[in-house]
Length: 117
Image (cartoon, rainbow, N blue to C red):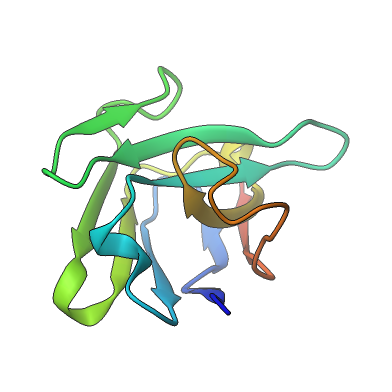
């Protein structure tokens, strides 16, 4: 059974940086495109960044130029480097396949990112 474990979140001031990491049991990264999603209080979960098996990346307009997604299939990890963080980036961040559904309804516990102004 696949498990996703997100880590690296925390409290940071506006303008700061964080690097999120997603570790997976099993070799799902070599089979699927992956994405980082986030859910802010009272809002729906949204996709912020994705990366294909070949390494092509995509970003939501709100994070373009500030966030960078990368993957290390040998380590079964996906990363999200977040720079120039803003209070509106505050959310719980999750990784999952892109598109969703390959893991059914499964989500990891996520990692909380809080950006203070």
